[in-house]
Length: 99
Image 1 (spheres, rainbow, N blue to C red):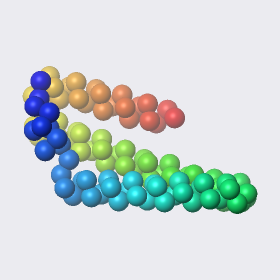
Image 2: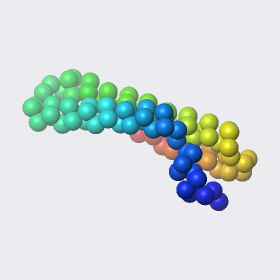
Image 3: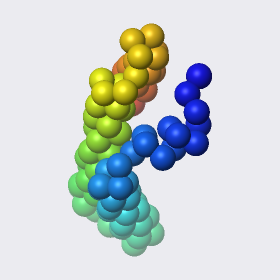
Image 4: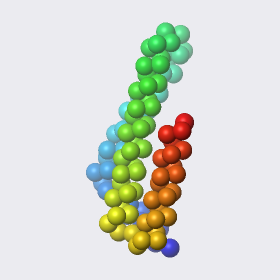
C-alpha cells in the first residue's frame, strides 16, 4: 500500500493544482451567476447557457484529474497498482459521463 504522505506530496504538481484551482474558481463564479439568475427570474435560455458553462468547466477539471492520474500511473506505479488505479479512474470517468 502506498505511503499516504508521499502520495499527497507527489500526486498533483504545483502547476496542476493551480490549473485545477483556477477551474474550480470559474465553476464557483458560474454557479453564483446561475443562482443570481434564478433569483432574478431570468429567462430559461440564459440560465441554461450558464449551466452549460458549469458543466463544461466541470468536464475540464475532470479531464485534467484523469490525465494526471493516468500520467502518474504510467510513470510511477507498479503494474498491479496501476491497473487498480486505472480501473478506478475509468469507473469514476464513466460515472461522470453518465450523468
